[in-house]
Length: 63
Image (tube, rainbow, N blue to C red; front, top):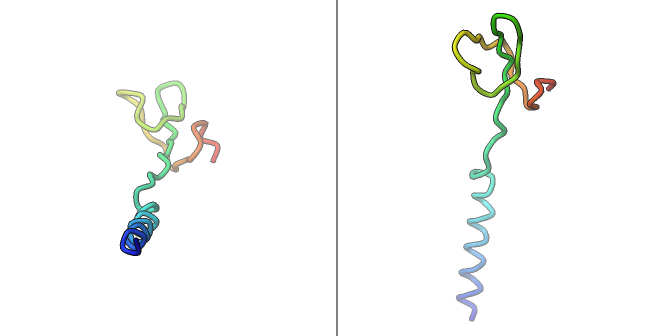
């Protein structure tokens, strides 16, 4: 019985240590400038768009 408890404790400790490693980071948003407007997106909206300086956490590029 003690071996099962010890094994479970070891597994729990390993899972606790690896939890932070497996969490994904927030994807960044960028301001993209086109011919006549600026939009906020994670990737380029298409051909002819230039990424402006800075990155943001919110999808409206406010932070």
